[in-house]
Length: 314
Image (cartoon, rainbow, N blue to C red; front, side, top):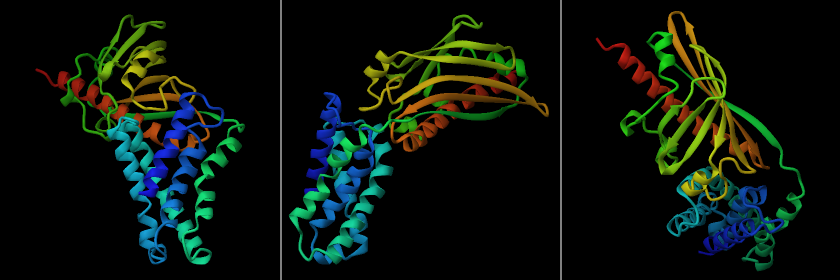
């Protein structure tokens, strides 16, 4: 129970700090995403009995209980979205186990009994790291994610299926984890003018809307675009509590459809380019690439199925 209370207090502290722009309390930080779960694990194990603290299985798995408890409470009270929790758990669970291992070592070698002073020192670690970390520059890195699919149809038919993808039905999109945890599914994409400078209007579930301004166009070869995010619709959709597409942490910038004919088979590629600016780009990019891979696969398979169905019609 102590670990859950600790997790809730520090989560609330950093969330409020970020909301009201407290100088050093930032949720998307090393202090909150790395040090915090380690501290949860340490605090949890420090307050176990000596016998429990010497059991390797307990010190590695018991710290998961407050992390999972905090996660469930956050979802029930709408503090966090399911998307955010699912993205945090693969980081929080192993790091809390690391904290449990550290606490087990401390108990074994230095503390016969639970020491409130030692526990307090570990408990305030996130608050010690946060102001130290704050002045450090958050690097801006640019990433690209791409997927390709083979389509059994002439190039011109595949090309015709790209500009306008309307009335997307739920059964046309395969199951994937991204949609399962709450990331909206695409509903339609409509091109007003198929020319450089023309716009594609994209609508997703939960009112998400954005535009793609065509920057390069080669018929039957390439359709490249700049992404224009409607931040109001992103905010209304509440996809994540701490990160919104187009904010200081993350932005989708551009993309392209590339079409090639290889050995008589049409290959369609979908690429998305994005920016990340944080001290945890290494972790954020893993999830961004995963979600984009799901999105690309859904769209490419949708185009493939529609084009091949049309191509096979008598």
